[in-house]
Image 1 (cartoon, one colour):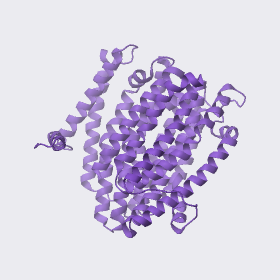
Image 2 (cartoon, helix red, strand yellow; image 1 turned 90 degrees about the vertical axis):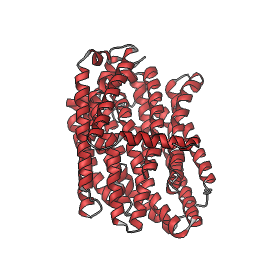
Image 3 (cartoon, helix red, strand yellow; image 1 turned 135 degrees about the vertical axis):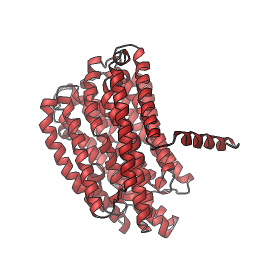
Image 4 (cartoon, helix red, strand yellow; image 1 turned 60 degrees about the vertical axis):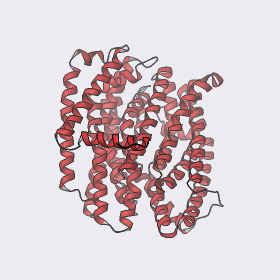
Length: 522
């Protein structure tokens, strides 16, 4: 599981870094204003489907069924089940896409209620959304093929394909802008083109893995009906974070122009650790946990769940605290260029702090939900999700006016924390979660190391190094790098001193692995 965790995490990190580059380009060219708001709304809808299916309901429902079929009946029944699922999925998603293209103006009145329905921002959002909406068909098909590869424990291939989203997106901005005459339109076409590339690459990878998927006449077999039933309720349970973010976006359209953009860029930075750690943990944990549950190996199931919690928190805790402390220099360095002003960076940093407070909870939701999914229970996370969704909506309404662009992010963080508490309580009551003393001790020591790191960063921010990190100019890149290096060093030393990791052993293991790859003794 750790090998899969690191593989998926590594590829996801590369994808997120490239995504950050794409966002930097968009921020510099479009700033934080009406056109950026329109583009982000057009991107949000199909992207929500991507995360719901790629990292949510489809993965949670399909992988256990596929793995069980593969283990119990062999490759041919598993291949037939995957092909049937792909055919049904593409059929109904195509119908949704066609309906979306026709009724896009009405859809935007729901997801962007604050846009003036006669204004430029609304008209641009409709145009861009019609360009990007076919992406949901392509990326959900790609998510299914990824589920097949994950079920075969080929995590690296599935994770690597998602890198192409940002590669194609960056290329489209530069290559298509002269043709479209508009950066926003060029980037929107890049989104749909990336879906074609990802789907194609994954189909080729599945064929090379010996699982050639074919389209068959769609029909509701017994397994497909079970899958649909689990997905229908699993969409809300596993995708509650994305639904909460959509609620944040809807509320953001009711705030002053530019608020959607400010929250988007803050969320993109927050998504870097969330996507890397949360997606990696959830993706690699589910098939391993499902195998232990199927084999009725209770002790191994508990040990796997606890180890996944530790893997997720060892980097999530310092990430969250560092984002709170260094929010302003991070946003200024990453996005404070071109049309994205210093004031925009400072305001977006406020949103980032509100998101970062809930980062551990966002990640733990992805780590704890497989505890239900592996046992075929998708209903319980839905009930919890509905409760926290309602809480998020109420908090959004309560905080949007006094806190403006900080209100929706803070509401999501609070709702995610409540979600985690409810997941822990119910898993524990059912005997599906048994957090042992060693895990509690290690997490506590991680927290101590993370707090020590915060103390060092807070002290450095009051020095000239901290002040230079937010001033315009190339020096802020170096200053931010030094602050991050200081934080990493402090945290690493803390982990070593508190006995969480043995850095010497880690270095020795890495050297041995590199030596084996080169074909010589370590």
